Length: 141
Figure 1 (cartoon, rainbow, N blue to C red):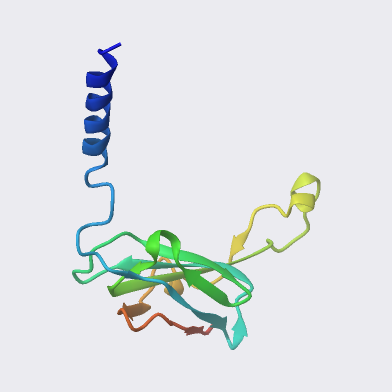
Figure 2: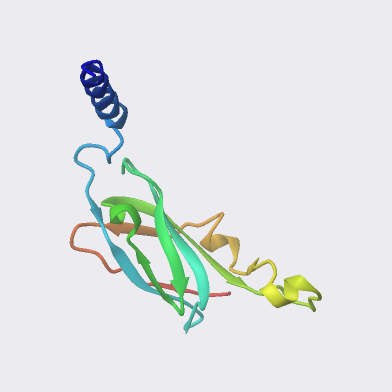
């Protein structure tokens, strides 16, 4: 049964080496960001917000769901500190009549915000350790 001890040691070493670099980059500081997103003064009922690092900011894309105008980007520790391009999407049931199972289950969602707030977004946010609140007032015009 002595053969198990070297095997356990090798497995432990392998696991340690495999996880090296699994965590966030050294020195990467994140903060939980929350706020309100409105369109023409009304809260967006259902959507998502994404923070994409720009201008030398390191880290992953972060974000979270928008529900009744409120969002909280807290997954994996939040949003990296630095400059970000912001993409916002809002969803609703597609216009027109639905029949069958799709109508019962809600069917596919339609993204209705102009591209200037998502795929062609010029929205930015500067996130610092003291700026955990970011509100966005959008206009459909």
